[in-house]
Image (cartoon, rainbow, N blue to C red; front, side, top):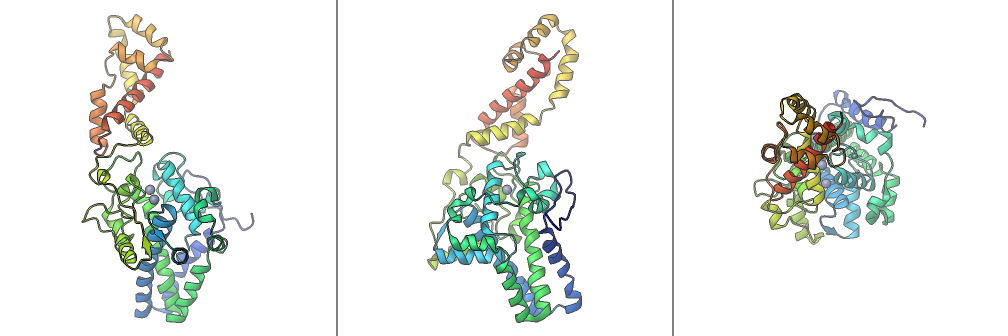
Length: 384
Ligand SMILES: [Zn+2]
Ligand SMILES: [Zn+2]
């Protein structure tokens, strides 16, 4: 590939995508305001375009094209796609496919933008320009890839943004372009990217979701409700992400207005059990949460303590022989030996209460995590 630009992304693979260039230029264009000046007309244009296009991202890219949380007609679907792509965040097909992948693997090693695995910079912006994330898995978004107008927008993804930039110039001159278009576009980039980075690091976890998603009221304000990200990971199908009356969700309020105009229908709402946090978790979430809980135990340190205490046991030779034979049923053997320092189920439960949010499935998570701890520890002890 020609004109490759290499920027190292902390710990992750090199970013070698030429689209870094327009992205960097968009940031540099913001400084054009020093030359053009900042007019009130341009500021009003920029602020309006920020909120209008934020709805394109939240109501379009995210709640419609990624999650289908409501229905609309084909014409308004196209309007939503144009509004979303006027932010220059690639096509709705690319965005939706990548986002569906994020929910399938959130905060595992497969996740394309997990701060846990790739660091905050890469999860914020680096992943977008990583060559391996350039292609669009159309199978993941085949429900929308069958519309030719969306495929056209996919092919010419920058058209809506360029048209808007030109319009800004004609409306408010150079200041309209630099302040009205570029300032708001760059602000939109980073507000959106904060959901992938900060909303998986800072905030509160109301639900056990098996990932690091958080509810963050500051992000919720600037992203019109997307900051209630832990709620969203708990029930992705919902058109509403602020589950409580005080969790402002401007995207949802706009969708409600659009439903009154009959442009939007069949908005999915979270079930009562989810709102009350009384729903049972799926086996996949239980396993993910249990693995995280088990990982909070320092197995190496526990193993060292057990090994140090083995010679002091009255039946130490017998215990050692037993452990050595326990390669295959490590966890069973370990639980039957009653060794000191082996974490008890109560200890795992105490860790769960400290680390996890409330859920009626807590017993299942603790059982699974306890088994994992015993298995890991048993396997280590069984090695001479
Ligand atoms: Zn989502
Ligand atoms: Zn997320």
